[in-house]
Image (cartoon, rainbow, N blue to C red; front, side):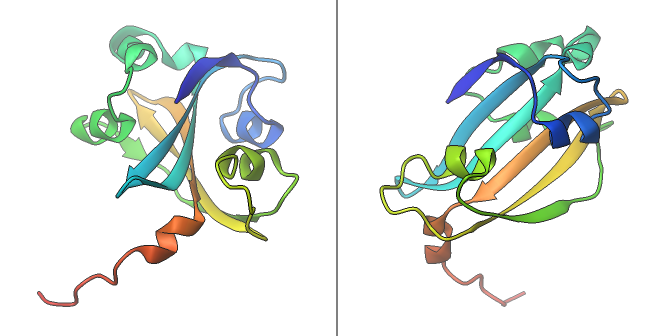
Length: 140
């Protein structure tokens, strides 16, 4: 896990309607299942979002961001964007850093969340181990 201030990628700046060179809090984590990384998550939180009730987002530590987001009854989630990433792309490289043999491509998705109308962007990159995920039961 890492968390630091940095400049978001151009497409992240655009999605969050931030100015070029504007900094944001960038949090990168791997989500594990059975001791294997299944998802690489990169969250971009503009400085302007980290005020008022959302100030605590800067100090989550190892607490899951999703638990905080989905506990807020006023949270709003925007549409998903889906992309196929390949070697050489920054998110692909960060997501697959734990693998000696890199996959040919990786799928990911992202969406913006709004807390009190203040945005943050969550990118989720699905790693090769997720293919081992058991088929969900169709029983109701």
